[in-house]
Length: 534
Image 1 (tube, rainbow, N blue to C red):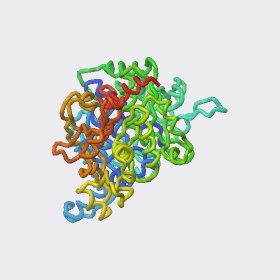
Image 2: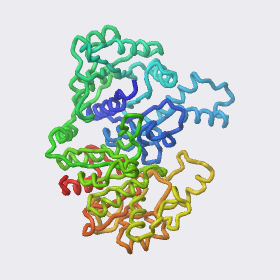
Image 3: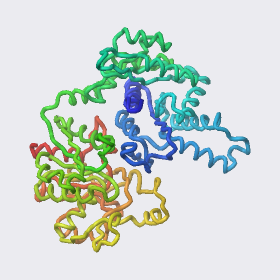
Image 4: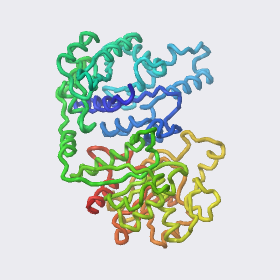
C-alpha cells in the first residue's frame, strides 16, 4: 500500500551502503503521467521538492538528499510522462532510425538508459532505485519490466527489495503474513523474485514470522528484515542494521569492498540528540494546504518540518510543531491571541488567494507582539504586503497574483514570467533551482550564514516590486539579501533592536537542510523561538 515507507526504506538502504564505504546515488521512479511534480496540487501529492538544477520532484528526493547529504539532479528522477515524452521526441527526430517503436522493449530500455546515466553521472558503486506505487498496479508495470530485464542480463548486479506491510488486527492480536505472501507472488507474476523483504509493521517481527515469510516467499530467513514503527524516521537505518541489512545486500550484489562494517557513528550521534532533548520549543506553522478530507496532511511542508527538527535537536530541544490553518483566522474560528502560545510562527510558501488574508493578519499580530516570525517565499511576500499596509498605510497593497488592480502592487510578477502566464505555460516555467544571493553585513541573515554570498534554491513567479523598495526600506524593513545584480530582493528582515526575529526569504532554505548540517537561517529562527521561552 502507499505510505508504507518505501522512500525512507530506500534512503536508509542508501545511507547504510554509503556508511560501508561505497559511493551511492539514488533514483525515484513515479508512475504517473505528469512530467514532473510541479503542476500537482500539494494536497493531492504532498510537497514539491526542488533540486539545484530546478527540477520539480517528489518529496522522496528530499529524503534521499537529507539521508545521503548530497545534491541530486534531474536525471535522478523520472515519471511515466517524462519517459514517454523523451521516447516520442526521439521518434519524431528519427533517432529510432525508422523502426517500429513499441511499449516493450523500448519503454523499459529508455528507463534502463536513464538509470545507467544517473549511475555514470555519480560515478556510483551502487544505485538505489525506488519504484513508486504498489505491486500489481498497471501504472508501474513498465518499470518492473525494466527491473526484470536488468536482473535477467546481470543477475549479480541487481537486488530486488520488497517493502511489505504486515497487519496486526487489534481484535486478533496476531501479525498476519498472508498479504506479504500475496504481494511476493504478484511480484513473481511479472518475473521478479524478492531478494530481501522489509517487513513493515507496528511492532518488530518475531523469528516465527520471519521463518514463515521465508518459506512462502522463497527467500532466506536472514533476508527478512524487521521494520517496525519507530519514534523517528532517523532511527530506521540503525534499526535495519540490527538485522544486518547492509551486509545482506552486499552479499546479494556480490560486493567486495574494503570497509566490511557499517560506520553510522555520526548518524547515531544525531539520533541520540533526537532521543534525549533538553526541553521543548513550540512552533506554529500557519499554512493552507492541511485539509485532506477529515485528515491533516503535514507532508505538504515536510522539508520545512524536518528543517525545524534538525535545528531544534542541534540546539538540544524537541520541537513541538502545531499546524494552524490560515483560513481559520479569516473566519474567526481561531483567535489571533492563540499565537501567544508559541515561541515562533512560520508561514511557508504557497500560491493563490485562499487563506491569504488570514496569513496577513497573523503576520501583523506577530510583528506587533514581538513573536519570532519566519516567512518562506509567499511568507516573505506577505510580510512585505503586511508592512506596506500597516506601517506605510498603503491600505490596498497586495500582490498582482491576487489583485491586478491594486494601487500598490508591492509584489509583482517577474518580467521573464509574464509571457509564460499569458500563454498558460505553468509546468517547469517558474524561477527554479539554485541562485546566488549577497548578504548585507550586520544583519540577522549575515550573522546566521557568516559570509557575504550564499546560494539557495528557488520556486517562485512573483517578486518584490523594485518601484517600492526605497520607500519600504525608509519605513524600516531591511532587504538584507539581494541578487548579485540587485534586482531581486531575496531576504527581508526587521533589525533586532525593533523585533527579536522577523525574517522572510524569497528562496526555500528548507531544501538544503540536512540532519548533520542544519540550515543556519532555521537555526537562528529556532534559537529566537527558544529565547522567547514558550
